[in-house]
View 1 (cartoon, rainbow, N blue to C red):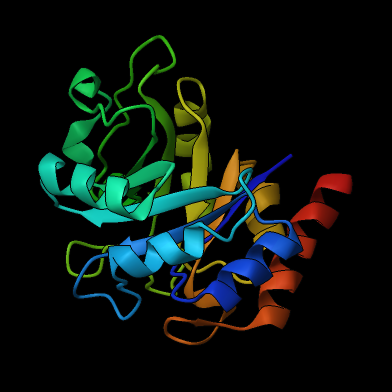
View 2 (cartoon, rainbow, N blue to C red):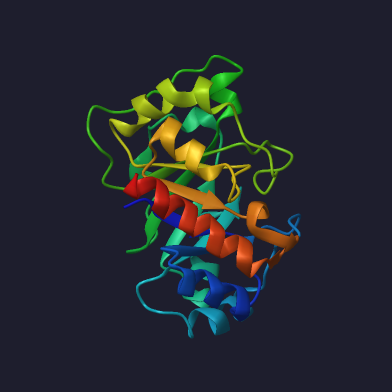
Length: 221
């Protein structure tokens, strides 16, 4: 079953909509430049009222390990999504340890597709990184761009990554195109923020439900 994350949650109402619709995870953005930025204390209040089986993912951009840990503990997160450059390349993973929380590594697809960079992974699946998020973000806007990368062009990249890691596709997904993304890329998971919003930071319940339903229909077909 495809793992589904609804990101950019800023209220209990939106988190509950996602959980009730069948999302596997909800994401909270701790990045001041984002319109979806949220306070750890507010996240703690939301998390305390969500089902235990729903993952509570904190999204961090260029943050120190010390702050990540502090926020994760305060907000009671179960997973961390870390945005770094493609130079990580699958190496140095032993340094990414934040307790027993899952670690998701976000990489910009453009750095591989446009610059011709190659995916360099180990011959074994990582025991530290739970999944790699392949996103359409840039250094100026790490996420929430509302734009998709070239899925056809990325198919071989995702296939290569899948040999050593779970791959989550993000960026520009919405209820109308997510089925195509799943069909072309066959990812382990999908992640959406702006594609299911009424306004930045406020989810549209109908879009959230339609997005998740579209993924599940694709699985059945």
